[in-house]
Every structure is written in C-alpha cells, then in structure tokens.
Image 1 (cartoon, one colour):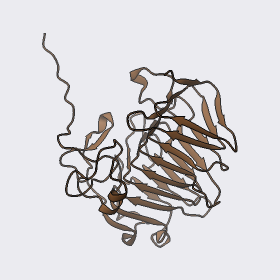
Image 2: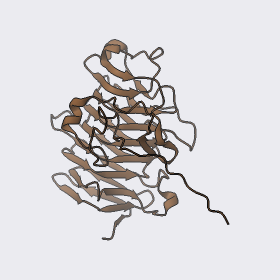
Image 3: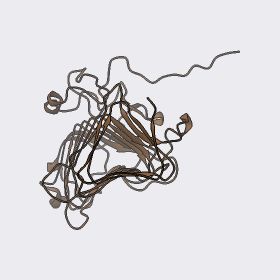
Length: 309
C-alpha cells in the first residue's frame, strides 16, 4: 500500500513493458523524471486511479506545477496505455515523439493531466487517441501537436488559466513542425480558457481540409481573425460563450445547470462510450454533454459555511 518514490530517473528500456496496477502511486522528487523507450501501461480504474505526482504530498502543493520533469516517451516507444491515470505537478506531463511506423503510440482514457509548468501533452509525429480525459492548468499550450501524426479528442475537456504569470499560448496548438500538419479530430469536446483564441492552427484555411475536423464541440476562438478558420471543417461547433463550469477556480470542470455544454454532444460516440471520466452513465438528459463530464442531477458548487462563535 505504500507509494514508490523516484529520485533521479526511472527508465523503461526498449523491448520491455512496465505495467502499473490500479491504485499505484509514484511520486517524483524535485527534478526527477521518467523515460519510456519501451511501453508503459497504467491499468487504473475510477475507484483506484494510477497517480504520477510530486513527492510533496501536502495539500497546498497539490496544484503546484514544475516539481518534477514529467514522462518522456521516445520515438521507439509504441502501444502505451494511460487508463484512469492522473499526472500532475510536472514541467511537461507527457512528451511523446514518434516516427510514422503505422503503430498506435498512445491511448489516454479516463485520465487527468494538469497543473504542469509548460504543457500537459506535447506530441511530435505521434498517433494518439484521447477519450474522456481532462487537460488543464499549464503556463504554455496545454496540448501541443506537431510534425505530423494524428490525435483524436473524444469527450475531452481542455481548459486553461494561469495565475503564475501572463499566458500567451492557447490551450491547443496544432503546428506543421517540418511542414507536416497533423491529422486532428475533435469530437464532443470543449476547448476553452481566458484567452480570446484557445485554438491556434499553424496553417491557412485551405490547408486544414482533410486534416482538421471538429464536430459537436465548444471551441473558444475568434473566427473573424483566424486565418485557418474553415467552416466546412467545424460542424455544429460553438465558438463563443462561457462553458459555465461548476467551480473553475477550484478546477471543478463539471458543467453547471446553465452550461451550453449540456445536451449538445453527438449521440454516435456516446453509444460507443456510454460512461464519462467519472464512470457516470451518459446521457442523463435528452442528449450527452460536451466534454469529459456528464452532468448528473443535483450537482452544484459546494458552499463553505462559516461557523459563528
């Protein structure tokens, strides 16, 4: 029942698979990190998630970024699974570089990657599937995808604000990086934050056809100023409006009662994925909700009562 504590570095070598069981906690000392040249499989579940975090376990350090390096997946690493896993307090939570070998590089499901100094996910040429997952609270782009590859976001929540300084980079950046634009699908997902544009694509409107596709999502962006905007690639996408989370200041990113996320997601993916990030059944209303969280009846912000003398 005790956690593992890593000082220095932890290496998963080529040709090997490290399987991390449900409920495992791996804490990293200051400036420690993990490198994966083989395969990492985290087999968590909702009741017992896998945790990668700083070894400063005091409550006040729970959302403090930059306390360890993060996990670096090298280009020879394939078949990685992050299932019901939380990775926080790093510089870059997950960095993955890959070559186009036709093999899937990573699947992220039911996971939370947040409270990281630079990014929660940096992918270069990798093939990744993200489902029912949360990416939040970073100083630069929370998710950065470039140099080809592909990435799917299905029922995901990408949200950012940064209280440690001025933030210029969007929640999601999609770049060519060597002239190759990645293939990215955004389905039933929310991309939001306190900037005007929280999605930036390093391409022109005509270049994203067949490469970028979004459906039944909320993506905060200024369509009038974005050179990449192509209405044919964004179907039933809300580009304005507050997602109205229950308590964003405390990173409670469930939709509130008046949220425009409620009942706005597509039904097809919900049939394939009938449970949300909390293992709650979807839909609870006439249609599923956009994002990683399906609103449950009666959910509301917790109110702290101040006792009298």
